Every structure is written in structure tokens, then in C-alpha cells.
Length: 131
Image (tube, rainbow, N blue to C red):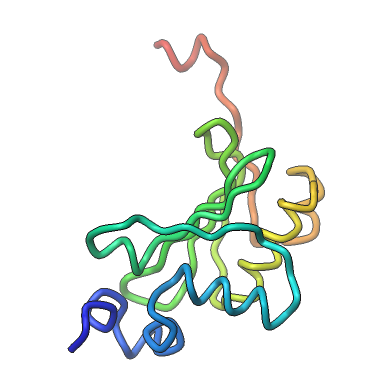
């Protein structure tokens, strides 16, 4: 069994095993649907190089991880390291569509309206974070 097969699980993610991991799967899906998601990166070592990906844009990053017990993609929209919106999808295409919309300049309000599976995160005040 290859490293990618062991990390992803052939049963849940056969398409990603075939492509060599999440990052390359997202890149291929974006290309297939002619969506601009920019550069897709993954950690260089360990299991996460197959199971995590980050799509960066000028105003933040879309971070994607995989579910371990069921097939789903966990999506975080991060601005300056803080999660601003979060959601889950069961297919790669909605993940790529979120990333493309974010890269194209969609606001969080527009993003969560267009993709109902994405939820805005409440931002705590600096006083609450200190306590």
C-alpha cells in the first residue's frame, strides 16, 4: 500500500489516491471546471501532505482538510490567521467553487449567501479574548 493510500483511505477518497493527495485533487478539479483557485499548497511531510491543502489569495486563505470516518471536506476561510467562515462539503467541486469565489474577491457575506454550507464565525472582541 502506498503512502497516499494509507493516509487517505482508498474506500473514502479513491479519486484523491489516484491523483496523489488532496492538493493535486483540488488543482485537477479546478482545471476541469475552469476555475481560478490560484496556487494550491500542502505540507511537505507527514500524513498531512496528502490530507491538507491551502489555497491562498490576496485577502486570506482557504484551508481544506479531510474527514477521517466519512467522506467530507472541511473548509476554513482564514484572514490573518483567524477563521472567518467554516463549512463542510462532500464533494470537491463546491470546495473549489468556494476557493475561486474567495480568490475573485467575494466578501464573507456574499460567500456565505452563495454557499449555504459555509457559516460565518463570530469574531470575539479583544477583551473577551484576554479573559
